[in-house]
Length: 608
Image (cartoon, rainbow, N blue to C red; front, side, top):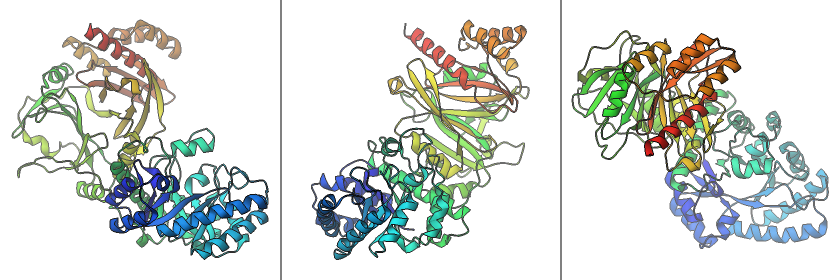
């Protein structure tokens, strides 16, 4: 279907926004009136630019407070409406958005509002313009699309129809099944936005917290399916008011926005038998990952990480035969240490490898969703990998999962390693915790959702010594892949937010004892914590003593127990070792403040 986006959704001047939308691949744009007013281009110049860029101008918006008013006010409104229609015609736009009245309405009557919309339709028809009436979620009298339709139906004018906006419908929890009763030709326009589930007034929610499809909690696929099933054949258009997107690079945001619409069309096609899928942009089907393949740490000198891995029982599997890269293994956990093109870099997570059911299908899906490809130099004897660059700049690679019990083929590219320790209690990578810049956190959610079919857990906030850390876990349904995304408080931006790799263990006490015997310096846990554990969970004295001795942390849920420990931070990376007992499915989030405080104390001590 044709795609469009409101210019209010991205940053920059009107012309910059239009260039960004065209470069991303949008078919058209909605012109937001304040963008035009602030532009140094005349309506005719904007129209000409759109033609050169291959963009249609689909909607001019908004025209406010037109219905439910007294006659004196309506006469003034009609003068204002005529000026708006003149501008729309100069732009070459044939549809104008009219919002339900939020400020000047004094008459709560469907018949009265319908009569005024009918007269507005008469005026609009003189300019060959259609009026798309939209029920704002905070409209004084008209705040429900069903009432807006009753009014438009009473107006009974060919130039008067509806604009359906997902935010105004879904934020109020309105039943969308009534859309089926609206003739498709009377739905003049469709605007789409996602949003997180928040408890706040709808106006503030709308103006600051809308998201692109796939980033929030709305059932957008069902909503769109019902609009299309009603017969709507206009653009799928995004209208996203968001403080972050209005500050970030317009080219990047526009591409991000289009990806969300492509993903949404894929979701609609997958779940609705009532929609002609030939109208929707196809996306290659690819199954979610089976699990982690590797994590790559990059630095100019990885010696300090090697020491840490050896203390933790990892085996050096060898050096790559063509690159300054080494592989360390424990169980099915594989850590790649990369020193190529890393001058001046401290250890950090540079890439994540995933095992997928069909690597070719995942590669094609990533291409369909416009993911920037990640480059990996390979020779004829080396295993090719699909790859994409994530919004934070890290890379994600994937290979087809090997038969059960066998390592991936690329492991054979590493030579002269030590015999693998088969007695380790480390089993696999449990999760990888990634720090996200505030500018890309929402984009990262969509990236992982759309390409890898990961689902997003509800976000949580963790108290740090200097602010709150917002965390949201992206995961497969079975938990084989878990990627907590952390957004640091702005006050920590300069210091950087550490990232970490968590390893699943069959016996975390044994891993900790052996690591300590090899000289591992644990992250120090205060005695107060163990008094808290004993009091909160009723843990017996011997177990508390064992936890205290090894600096282990503990958590419990109705489904099981969680025991874990952290290492010190090297560069911007630290390791965590976890033991999940029973069906425990969390991450010990209540212990995160203890870890954050200990890490801060360690940083301050290192500076002295």
